[in-house]
Length: 489
Picture 1: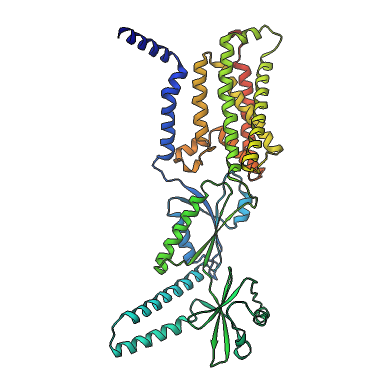
Picture 2: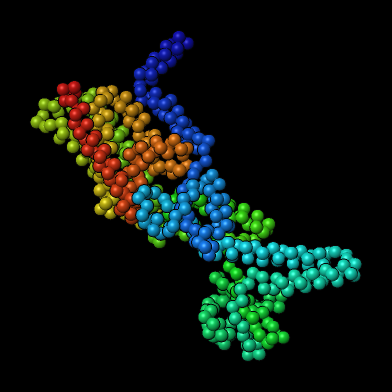
């Protein structure tokens, strides 16, 4: 028992002397707990900026009341940070920042179409309710007569509600062409003469209310026979109000934005018509036409994170290991200067970064059909990132003498930066104060710049990352030369 206690005390002392052991056993798990708790449980709702262009105006140039109410409802969600712009296309091109761009366009006629559609649906519900009452209710003769008069009035009123009259055709001339299925060429020509095209996949169908419909995926025409006037009245269903949501490819917060917009639309539907049918149609488009795989969007984050860790952790640990083994002391007697040693390390890390990039691109293309390939500007940014983070490692290695301490400090710097920079988790999901911290980290600019170049092919979006990483490279290379002391080896 005494030997076991003595061995336990000895092992504990050895473990406490190992700074690396303390870090990975206690400090690292605690650090992860703090980071993830702060990121995912910070008590704040993540906000996603959405730029809105409103095309729905009154004749006097003032936005319609319903469109303004819709914008306010989006802003009141707490999830969306609304920014109204005059022109989405121009704003996206002029945007000096980088990262995901989210836009929403409220189409012209939003209020008018929503109100017409709402009234049409309400009357339809009323008509169906009256039919149900007629079948289920036990009414007196006078009550039923009054009920029938009301039903006929409603049917007459609702016949043209929600429909836009386009033109008339002579019934005697065209009635023979009203047939189920394929549309007769004479009927198609009659529509084309009035400048209304009918697609090849459209079909004609007889409806229970006595009308005919011509419908395809995009539009619907209604043909109402009028025997008294010997006419075929041609109508078109009035369109639902329309908005279009634009998101960037690979935007991890895009689905949240789209879901929030749909939630507001559903709320508007409920308040306007009280049923599940929709008055507002949401279109979803990406701002890029290039079809990329999900792996394309993860690649910049993984590349930048591991280039950073190789530069900070590996270089710091290796430098202090050379100190302890006396390698640097022997190098001081060789005919080389400090800057030669530092530049050799920088060159080795840069080569490693390019090899890592090549291997990951190759494997990603083979396994996931990745299309994003770094061009000359992407390679330039990778070079700057490798040099900048290697220089940071050289500076840390110049200060630290103990290998275990170097490993702990390198991990303490690299891992929080990896998780807080947005390389793996969008910073918009962070609490407000952590977003500020993220934008102060060099890895944030490295990742965003590489994403702009490899995914969005937007050179202007990489200007700030180039400036930040270039400045860090100069500052830390000079600092590494200053703090590396051959005599202290």
